[in-house]
Length: 231
Image (cartoon, rainbow, N blue to C red):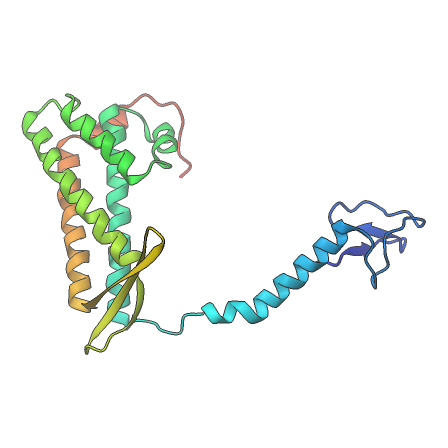
């Protein structure tokens, strides 16, 4: 329930619901049946609109379709695998810069994917990876990360609905093109979705293996400690 415009205190005096301050008995503010100021009129109208919106507008946006469980599991696997890949990106950046996790995650956590990719490109191409073979491997991983990011966004941010084709679901994406909206649709079987999830899992495995050979764990362990992470 929404808070009233004002509440009664222990002394049965009116109190402002926003500040809790007592309202003098001779104050021209209205009783619960009336309104006298723009502030209170605005608050009440806003409350009334909110209640009306919750009762009449919101149900129109409730999605009634839920994909089959195998499709849902594959979509979830895509999201989970990408989260692991993003964690590897952060750890690799911090390890190559020799910044401990306690301080470094504060810096990298808010970075966009493209900002992290820029840092990895700099680290791979500017001598932070002294082993040339490993530097080349990193350069080969980067396009795969870029492609994986696109796959992840396509699946995770898609609007899913039923398809006329058996055992498939339909992804709908709405894009703005100038003043017009463009709708793109594509049908996926559960096997299609699992293939994307498996591709991300393979990418995560290869990236983790490269990070291990770059001794990222050791670099993070020996980095100067400026702060610590709560365990």
